Every structure is written in structure tokens, then in C-alpha cells.
Length: 126
Image 1 (cartoon, helix red, strand yellow):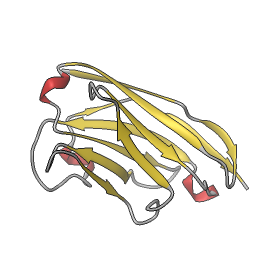
Image 2 (image 1 turned 90 degrees about the vertical axis):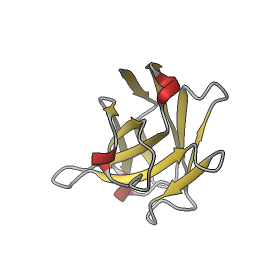
Image 3 (image 1 turned 30 degrees about the vertical axis):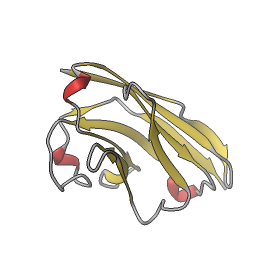
Image 4 (image 1 turned 45 degrees about the horizontal axis):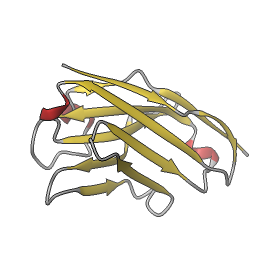
């Protein structure tokens, strides 16, 4: 089992920045990838960014956040961060952290992940 706890959400003006954190505990040694997803009211959960052990370490981004968001993790690989810059009102959503031990190419699909956090609200005011 892996437990994930997100933090760092809040209210920010458009153009501002926030950094989300996801602390993992439990059987983290088996984790292959961790990702961030978001869900706005009335919309499906969508992929935001992910980081995996592929090729040492690889990062993946949704087109909508590329160049504005950066995913990273600490050296023990138990905490993943999402630095969000140049925030827009469209970024308003609940942001979820997820992890998986599966190796493969479905890193942008929510169903590929095994564990999820409870989410943290990000609200961007225009």
C-alpha cells in the first residue's frame, strides 16, 4: 500500500504561482511513476503531469500546461512537486496526486494508477 497526501493548494490571482506537494509513504520502493491530475466541476479528471523512472527519470506534461508547470521530486523520491507558474482561471480544479508500480506507456491515463491522494483545491481568480 502507498499513501499519498497533497498540500499547497489555495487561492491565487491569474498570472501567479503555486507549488503543490505530494508526500508518499508506505511501500514507495515499488513506485514506478507519480502523476498529477486535476478535475474541475462538471468535467472529467484530466492528466496534468507525471514523472517516471523511465530512462533514469522522464517527465510528461499535458499540452495545456507545458511551459508553465514543472514536475519534480526529491532525492529520496518520496515527495513529488508541481510548480505552477503563469496560472490561468482554466487551471482552477481539484488537483490529485497518483502513483503506480506498473511499467508501461499509459502514464497519461487515470486508470493506470494504483493509488490516489484526496486532492487539494486550486482556485485561480481572474
